[in-house]
Amino acid sequence: MRQAHRPGHFYVPKRVVFATGVVLVVAAGSLIAAAQIEPYLRSVRPPLDAASALPAVAKRVAEPVVKPAVVAEAMPPKSEPPIVAPAMPSSAVTTVPQIADTEASRQEAARQEAARQELIRGEALRKEALRKEAVRKEAARKEAARQDAIRQQAARQELARKEEARKEAARQDAARKEAARKEAARQEAARQEAARKEAARKEAARKEAARQEAQQQQAAREDAARSDAAESPQAAHRLPHSLRHRVVREATTVDVGSAAQRLASMAVGTYALVAEARRYIGTNPTARADLWCARFMNFVLNRRGYRGTNSDAALSFASYGHRVAGPRIGAIAVMRRKGGGHVGIVSGIDRYGNPILISGNNGRYGVAETVYPRARILAYVLPKR
View (cartoon, rainbow, N blue to C red):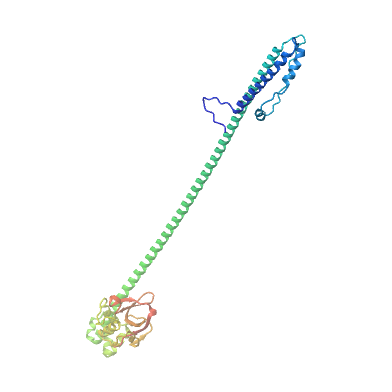
């Protein structure tokens, strides 16, 4: 692993150190070769001219130097140029020591040049490694920047998606609230309209009831006056002017019984019974605690001078008196219920044709005036004396 360069320290690559060692080994081999040549040169007879000695020296130098096995295996073979002795003129005469010194100087220069080339090559390799490292770092930086840009783009898209989803949810919620508000407004308008109609209906019913009440009271007063006039013709002066002559004429032409019957047939129901029954609304004038509607009906009839059924059974009135086809004010209405019946006197008719009855044993109210469905009515009868 390559060690990191620390500032202030000179870094020498391992290749340069190895090349320097190889150069030193080569130099040592050259010195050994020179030492082997020297005895041979001394054995030659002087003077020796350069032309005859140079080929032998060149042959000796050109022989390969045996290098150590480690160096031979570690270093790849290099193609070094062969050492060629410079051509010398035939007139030049050089001694053997001078030739040896020249060869040593040349080899030293070659070694230095090789070392310098090795340093240059190592420096080139180091620069190439630095350049590759810089290129790798730049590529890594660009890749990291690209990945970061992709992440930022994805984050922006995710934020945009969430914002769009939030806006859509807000829009749907607003639409839902608007629909709920419109529905509530519609229901409120419908409720107000229904309340207005109900109020109008109640007001109309109240006015109708008041009108019928006024009519009933007027009819009851007239019926009571007719009854009194029929029993005593001297009481005719108490009648209204419109009825006085009719009652007096009827009372003077027929007997009392026939006059009472004609007055009862002329009236739409017996209004005196209605007035008598209405006096006891909210009370219980009988001595019975339960199932006393028939007893109350007999009580009212007896109070007004009519014969009753003398029975506590409400259905006993179904075969009493004179049966009529429909509801009439003052008529007795008989209805059937589970386990028995119920009876009351008709005091009015609502706009749907249902009878309004005054009856006893009407829940916790005692005598009460209540609307009953017309489908429950079994019979309508008029009382008899």
